[in-house]
Image 1 (cartoon, rainbow, N blue to C red):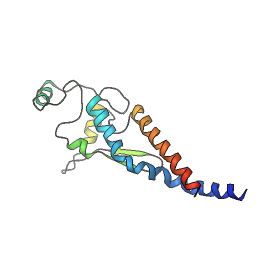
Image 2: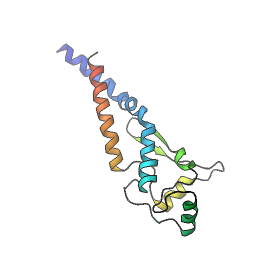
Image 3: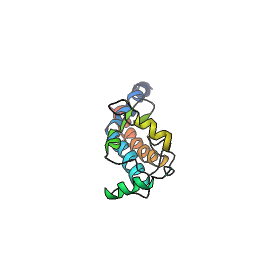
Image 4: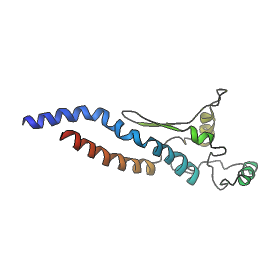
Length: 147
């Protein structure tokens, strides 16, 4: 019975920091899921739907000259927006944020007004991350409890 109490106490202490600790090494992958898989490859927002409205004809011509996709909205031109994305682990959430220009113009807010919510993960991406994190948390939890 004493062993069980000790394990229970360790478990409570672990719960608070373990999720953050396990997520931290995956923040780059989480960001890439958002920028590469969702936006660049699929042209979808957080809801999994295509970003609308489509690019203007003039934008499609410019993108075609650069060798960039024109059949979907990718929010990629120079790469500055995508490179600015940053995932942050918190105790109860993972937050992905865009950027502002040096002049203070909030590009992310402007693009959200036009295309909807694109910063963050679709349900498909979330499930992929949950699976990885769940496995690692179980491994860390077992190791920590049995020490």
